[in-house]
Length: 132
Image (cartoon, rainbow, N blue to C red; front, top):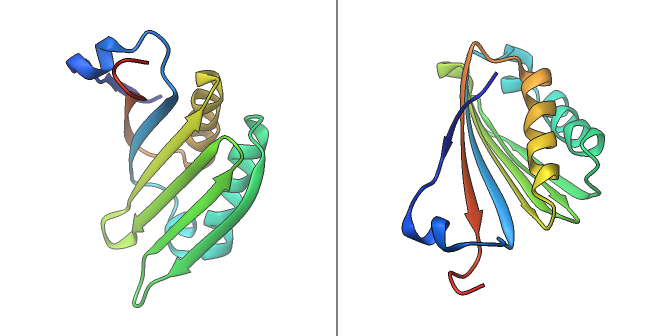
């Protein structure tokens, strides 16, 4: 579903065991309700985290006027953030997890199922100091 663009910078290549996995998602032509309705967006991201095996700590979302939403779902493994531009049918989502990289991938898969964008891309960056 996602076109994946892995970071191949020298810093990323130096990681033999990253401290974290950071996935940047670009979602185009998502369902309008997810881009406009705070409760639906929050529910979609919290459920994505839970279904992926992450442990939700807290979520905070804000509705902008006239439209657009920003939010964060804090998970024990790190966080998921989102900002929507309904006027462009677009959402930008970041998934950052520490430890097991599979959790970030499972969250991405769950988001893909719930958002069902017409076009999407993902860029994965392995995070941590270069000497780790």
